[in-house]
Picture 1: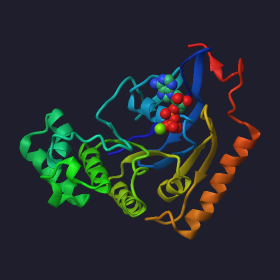
Picture 2: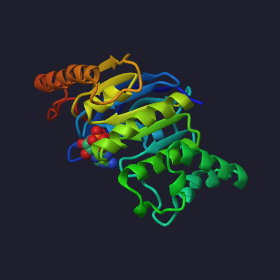
Picture 3: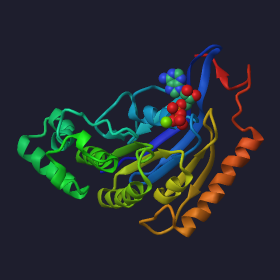
Length: 267
Ligand SMILES: Nc1ncnc2c1ncn2[C@@H]1O[C@H](COP(=O)(O)OP(=O)(O)O)[C@@H](O)[C@H]1O
Ligand SMILES: [Mg+2]
């Protein structure tokens, strides 16, 4: 189950002292159903803003955002977000956290239990089902968050720097596991990160955003075989190319906001 994602001429602005300040500027992006796309760019360039638009938490100032060919008008169960902070409910067990969305969606108890057990097993948390989030390591919490997301059988998984707070060994393991879960489910993934190597290790393509307001300055296909790890020589080499693109954009001042210039819009 997967869906294509499309952003056409998308700009987003937030209220500032001089009217609206652009966070994203003229973003055109087509993601095919089942594709794993990483979006990389410096902090504050509009990555979370882009995911919020796809999730339907916000509407664009300009342009169109669509999923499965239909305009995004609000949040929906076809799109599930995974955050840097796991966002698990502290008062619920791991099992009940993973079951939460399914229960809300009205999935009958028996089917719910089976789905939860399946996904806890897939993320290696079968033995941790009765624990609460504070009893888990950071890596285990993100596994629980992944199980909760995949259990909903979303068409599109929106991932906002989900591994940024983890220690390197946990992050490396989750990189491999996420690639396996993606291959198994065929879900479309839009994964944002400020970590270039992570983007290259995970993506079929790496979309490179300039510093804010975010504009697409690169679309780099990655054809290395999977599963990939951040330390692999080829990932490191391709990452250097992406980093050069980011540095060149900075030097050229591609996104430097200009007072009274086109980085300010009326909203
Ligand atoms: N709700 C908001 N209100 C005002 N400004 C915002 C809001 N959300 C994001 N911004 C601004 O938009 C820009 C992009 O933010 P964000 O998408 O969070 O960047 P990233 O995720 O790439 O670090 C930043 O300058 C941020 O301060
Ligand atoms: Mg962010």
